[in-house]
Image (cartoon, rainbow, N blue to C red; front, side, top):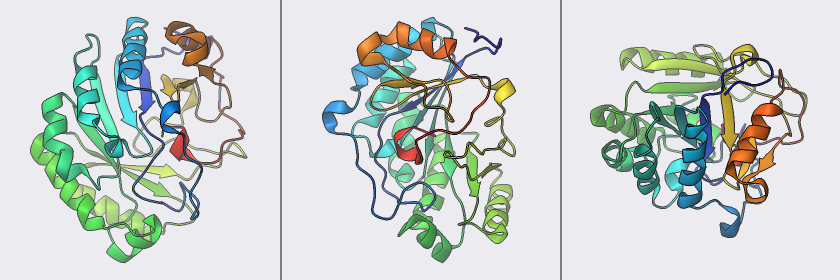
Length: 266
């Protein structure tokens, strides 16, 4: 599949839930946000059927996101169902790592290939402040379990912005180097003003090379993170929604109305 700018579309990010067990300051306001109702969220069967269609159209890489995907009940069952689809070369997950120690072995046995872990500081006090109460030791334990289960290469995603300091970023890089993990810096994004940059150590944010589509947990196919363009699979059906998303994928991102990542999928 190629879009109107001749970019090959091969990467699908699937948000399986808008819920999260942390309240990171750059991701969600302190008072929280209105969440989707249970009836609005796609079932595993709907996600799998959508993915089958997407793979049939050329998608080869899948990343499960949230919210926090590990809070979705039965997530290992979904991984197992997706792993059985022929044509997926890369099946991964982005997680905050808090529940990874509990699920790492199950995820690997279900067919998950690797994980990206969000980590913005290794300082316990700073981590608690940034996440509004999180325990960084649980993330460390989750990463260790992920390595032991073979969910590698593990990438650490560190957000750089107004809430994080250079010492926070340096601490994560030192931790990554010590544990032979890959390290990436994501500059804090401004949806309202359309401000973003290329991920240091990755390709996210590089519009010229963008190969991504996103499926939100309530069934919208989004061709661009920095765009309000979206197509509802419940109204259009899977294939038509995918084809339209590729057809209308913008050349570059810009200002958009959504302000928080929890409902879009990172």
